[in-house]
Length: 148
Image (tube, rainbow, N blue to C red; front, side):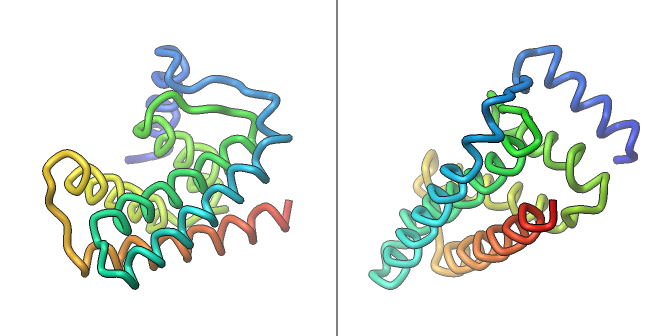
């Protein structure tokens, strides 16, 4: 999707109220990042204890809260997981502050979480991948927040 497509989707999310300006976000992003780190630790604990379904779900939420921290930092709040992804693409990927691969990992994590949560389908490999992705996303996010 070209930059025009990203802008179009971003504007659609705003128009539908699925993405909103949220000036308070700048004060709340550290708490979101703390939540992400807690979710990641719980995912790792569950993985160690062979609870791969919960490791998958918590790994995804570590990524979700990391993404939310970033858009809070930019003064926005999402009302859908899809629009969180759209906002990350528009606010960070298009500006080359975040790689498209990280957002793709978030999308894949969303699918893994939905499969575990709604269809009772998960795997050790999926849980491992989502935990590794969450670790990388948190690390990259801290770098972005430090540099701005």
